[in-house]
Length: 583
Image 1 (cartoon, one colour):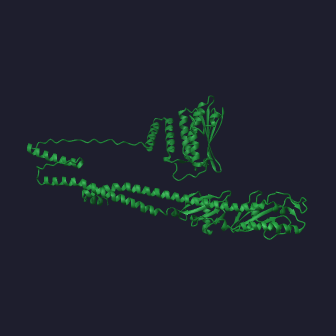
Image 2 (image 1 turned 90 degrees about the vertical axis):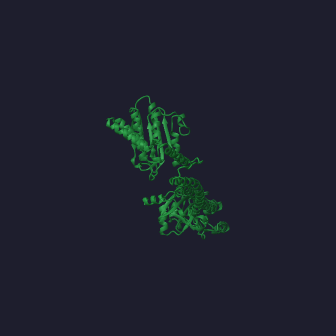
Image 3 (image 1 turned 135 degrees about the vertical axis):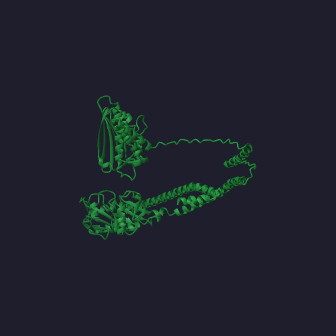
């Protein structure tokens, strides 16, 4: 195949080779820039589409919260109504008074609330008061005492939302605003349990789903993972899909072989979480127009380049054609030609040299073939080698070999520790590293410090190896150990120094700690270590890196007692190690 291509190229005329070479060289930057522009434009459109979907999800969550607030306001108008409180707390001896209270106030008042909120399906007050039931408005509390939600109902001032597969409702116990009494006002039982129950129309509560989300999969689930709302029918496949994404982080994922984008949005003042699944193809639906635009621009650039290349090639080939014609005439015996060129490029120089050569040939013929041929030698420039991490590792390995050969075990151990330290520190350019590699990096650094300091201090490591599989930021322990040795142990005036390093794995967090028995840190300086760049301490940078990657609730904590030593603790969340991150 390669031989056939080489043969075909050799058969081409020089002008064709020149045009093809220029065209090939020009295509590389065009293809690179075109591909880069396409990817950047596609990335921008995808991000913009994601922002639009997130905005729609936020609007939907706010509308749900607004509808919930409307019902909670309605509930408050019942719960804190003084007359309703009075009716529920009285012990009626005269049914006429009860009938009068119910028909003159309670019935019109609740009817008014239902007319203002027409999508309310049921409004009922369940009471322990011995009054008779009154339609849907007053029912005996025995009707709900066996229901699961009644047992979960908290005492408090804020209504609680409950749901099951068929209905959504809110309920609340009545606050104890007044003591119970009989019709004459005498004190009665103040322990009556009164519960307000309002069942709402699910469809109307979630009717404000934005148009951009109507074709997507939208779920609303509570903290236990139970479905509160779904915009599509919850068949078996949809139930499995929802169960598989409840605990997944927001971002790209595959469901049934299809690429999807997961968007999460909490509903304010609830434990509900809104999930939106957007097919990736919906984000990239404008990619076709980007491809067409990129191809058009690349084609126009290529056409312009072809014109420029053709003009340039013709100008350069013209001189070659002229030189070739002179050579043909000389070959035919015209040795007395006078060949000159005013062009200053290589072809012009070649033409002039050919003319000078022809002139010298004539002189040699005339002078009896005097041969005065001069040779010139070319010098080759030395190749410059580029130092890479592999060169550094190979050099350290060679030094280690020489140390082992010379029985210098301490030097061998130092070189090995230095090689391990730089291998994990460089980490192939990744910022994230496994906890295991970070511990290995720390151990290598501690070995180097111990050997260079003549083992002036002791080291105790208490490491929970169950945390080795999680991820962390590269190089967060080395600055802590360097500060502990430099500003703690090295400043200790009595006794031998002690460096304690520990790793603890909690339920949701991982904690590293570095403790020294040095002189401690002055309280004045301790308060500035994580807020100002302080000479001799590189701790502020470690704290800022942790907060930037994991959030403001994580970071570096420093406890120090003058004369007793200092303890620096790093707290990060449990995070599974990404594939390819660290060695």
